[in-house]
Image 1 (cartoon, one colour):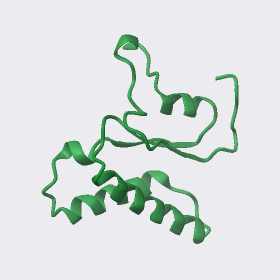
Image 2 (tube, helix red, strand yellow):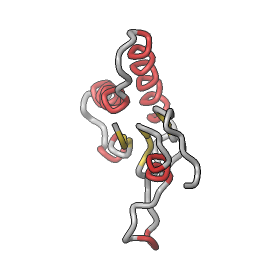
Image 3 (cartoon, helix red, strand yellow):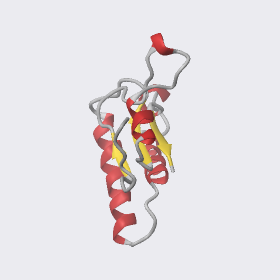
Length: 111
């Protein structure tokens, strides 16, 4: 927490449960994603619990595609929108027939 990264725009935490707190610290919102916001990252994408090794790559592939399109277009980086679109693509790909525990753990913190 002693470091500051004021120019850091986006961190994607690709491992499971990187945005999950500790049950022993229930009074605090302490997790890696919160710590990264605290040191200056503007946006964090992570997961609240374990994710499928089959589904996660599809979500991230679409997420990075949308982010790349935003950068290429010279527009403002909108990771929350990119994550929303990625999860929506997954949901539609499965015809809406996907258990919510497969798509809901993907979260965005920040701007």
